[in-house]
Amino acid sequence: MTHVSSSRRWVFTVMAMTARTLVQKYLIGKFPASRDELVDRARRQGADQGIVSLVRQLPGERFESAGEVVRALGHEH
Image (cartoon, rainbow, N blue to C red; front, top):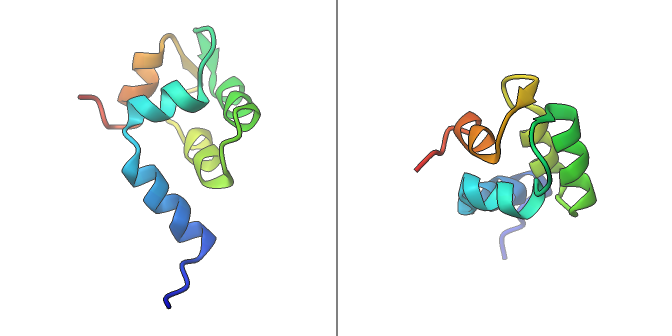
């Protein structure tokens, strides 16, 4: 049986989720919002540390819409 570290596990989780799904699940709320507000939202919604780190690394300080966050994640469809 292969052991998968928790850091690798979150990478697979992030890869399996589309950016839009991530935003819908963890970043629900009003916009505009700062990156720090989005980090707080993710934590309150139960995101694991990998997701929180991903949100913390978003480029930019403020996001006008959920769509802008999706674009910042680089996965706009």
